[in-house]
Amino acid sequence: MIKEFEIYVPDESIELLNQKIDLTRWPDEIEDGKWTLGTDKAFLQEAVRTWRHEFDWRKHEAKLNAVGSFKYKTQSGLELHYLHKTSNSKNAIPLLLTHGWPGSVQEFLKIIPLLTEGRDGIEFNVVCPAIPGYGFSDKPTELGMNSEEVAKLENELMLSLGYNKYIAQGGDWGATITKWIAELFPENCIGIHLNLVLAFPGEGDDPMEGVTPEEVKGMENLQKYQETGFGYFAIQSTKPQTLGYGLNDSPVGLAGWIIEKFHGWAAKESNQLVVPLDEVLAIISLYWFTESITSSARLYYENGPIGFSFNKISQPMAGAIFENEIARPPRAWAEKIYNIEQWNQYPGGHFAALENPEILASDIFNFVEKLKIR
Image 1 (cartoon, rainbow, N blue to C red):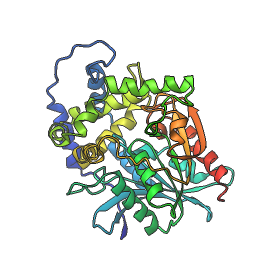
Image 2 (tube, rainbow, N blue to C red; image 1 turned 90 degrees about the vertical axis):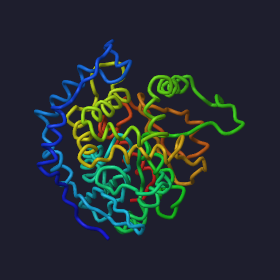
Image 3 (cartoon, rainbow, N blue to C red; image 1 turned 135 degrees about the horizontal axis):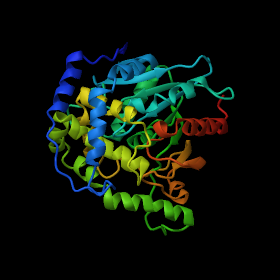
């Protein structure tokens, strides 16, 4: 069952947020200007001041509703929230966009109009589901909702919308979900586009065979992440409930947890965010108002180390490799798993649809042109 869903956060929920911000008890800090121990206190205090006194949630709420906000009740009874924007072309290609953590459907607000307006005769009907446990989608009440199970629900959603053939795109957990969709539903998913490519050397293979010097340098991103930025992953994949008590109750704690990712996965060695603070605060607000930080973190527990299948898929695949991405595997590794049709490298970081919507949209258009499915 599909129904329109108008997003509206009650005024009293916004007032409660403001009250809890005002009651914050700030910790001490040993500051080095490099975010070495976590989110910089002065940066966070200024961000929270903006959140409290200048940020306008209603503006972002209106943007989501303007795209087209809906809910779909799956056969399992769980409801998925999703954005759905159609183009003016009767030959538009269905495109499924899946976000990750700590993202949301808000990641796609800038890229959606680029995709629906089209280029060179190619236009898309865009569907952006919120992963179960994220945003306004239902929270799973039992264990078992991993990337494979999410893939089944998203394919069900696409079929319910009449999109029997579609292209799937994703980054972060959306990349694992997209890979599962291709593997499980090859009769429906006719191609995939990833802005985070997961790939590993085959068992018994020489991992450095066919790897270029530039790719070796790119692999250092993952090593650095594992050495200095892996703590959140260890916590969320083992004890997400314990973490949730603090982050679900403290808006400043939640902001510090999420902002650190938008700094470390995007801007690198600066005291700035590549993504505008207003957009980051909108995403944090969505987590806060929907109380979804605990349920979203559970996806790490559900997926274990990667939530990924190593089986090779036959559908064409495009990889958009951004230089500051957490993981940048060599193409030789990816060829063991994917049927690579396109492989491009770009400046930018993890949140591609937010940081570089024009680049990401162009790469998707270029991929579809190669598929010759118009």
